[in-house]
Image (cartoon, rainbow, N blue to C red; front, top):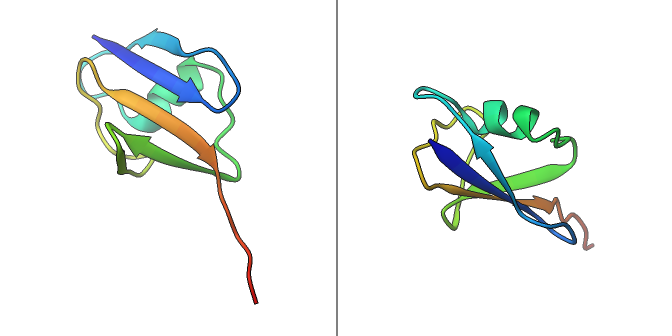
Length: 68
């Protein structure tokens, strides 16, 4: 199956994955660091342990923290 990985400021990548793969598996295959990032799968926030499906789009964005 194929999973699209989108990271701000970079070209999107399409990664091959097997059934049972997780967001973490796909990002490791794409050589993407997960430190300080948030993740969405098909437009909804997700976790690294979420299972992916063929055609999913994983978007990686920096965590935003702030405010007083």
